[in-house]
Amino acid sequence: MAILQVRDFDDGLYSSLKSMAKSENRSISQEVISIIEKYLSNPHVFF
Image 1: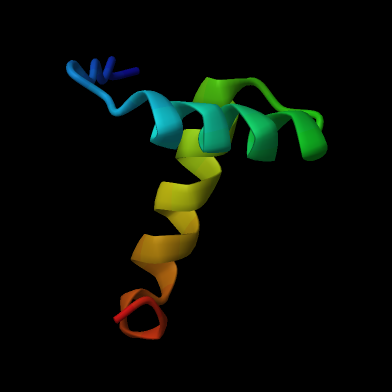
Image 2: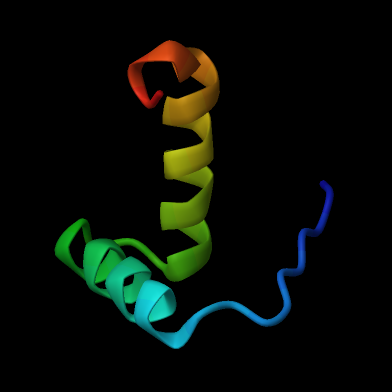
């Protein structure tokens, strides 16, 4: 399985991501994967 590392991530954005993960009972990594999967399955909804 691949590893993705993100540097210089905005603190406010990270805090929002952490809150979203907590509300879904997921780790931050699991939440990021979920967000990316949702986006890739239907990208035109986001733009």
